[in-house]
Every structure is written in structure tokens, then in C-alpha cells.
Length: 206
Image (tube, rainbow, N blue to C red; front, side, top):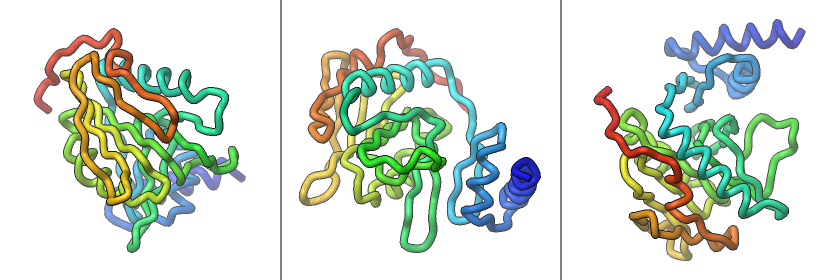
């Protein structure tokens, strides 16, 4: 029965990609059996693109660094297979960030989180505009979020959006000696660790 429901959800997901709206329930059911990850924006679904090896090295370094620092506490980093739900006034979205950290987790039988304290996206030429505009504007509405980090691939530079009492403020960290303070997690993240073993080469034009 579950397989049949999964196939039906996948069929509806294909229809949603062609312009028809899909329910949240069908999207979540379809993602559990889909071989390709999709992000969900108010009824429309979008297949996710692949990434360069450099992207995956950076993403792995970030996950490893965060995991070693928060291990044993109430917070936990997740990898890019974890969806984050964003509730906007007019619709719901689900994104797959590269490395979210959650301190108040949903039950483990859920397929998404909705209270991240930190979200990391590794930038590429294909995703830069989405990460810097669409996703940023959506993520910064999440009440639990304290940090949003945008990590460059071609140079050791990280742009951070940090929550302060007046709202989010933008900070830029450059060079392997830089440290990103993460007081909500009672730690800091060195850029030298983020970019360990990364060979800086320019991306090809899409």
C-alpha cells in the first residue's frame, strides 16, 4: 500500500512540476520514495541540481566541524538530506540546506525540521541568486534562526546574517585565519576548517 501511495505521489509531483499545485502531504510522501530531491514552494516542486566535488568537500567539512563542536549537547547538525520547513504568510516552503543545525528537534519519524538555529548554504554560480535572495528572505523569517551562513567555493569567504535585537545584521569573514563566532552554540567555526583540502578553481560558466 505504501508503495502504491508513493507512486501516486510521484505522479502528482511530476504534474506539479508542469504547473499544477501539489499539496504538502503529497510532496512529503513523494520525497520519501523519489530518487531525486525536490524543493517545494507553495505547491510547486523543483528538482535539485548536482554539485562540484569542491562543494561537497566544503559541505562535509562544515558538517564535521559543527558535529564535533556540539556533540553531547541538545543541538545537532544535519546533512543536506534534511528538509527545512518555512511557513510564510501566504504559503509553505521546504528547502534542503547544505548544513542546518537544530536545537529543538521534531520527532525522528518526521521527514523535516522547522526550528533550525543555524543554516548553511554553499554558493555556486547556479544557486547564488536563489541562496542570496529567495532563500535568504525565506530563512530569515524563521523565529528560531540565529545565523545564516553563505559560503563561497572559489575563495575563503563566508557571509553571515546574524540575529541581534534589532534584526539580522550582515557580516563578512575572509581568509583562513578568520573565525566565525557562534555564541548560540557556544563555539566558533574557523574558515581554515571549512576550507580544509579545498582546491580553489573557478567554476565553469553554466
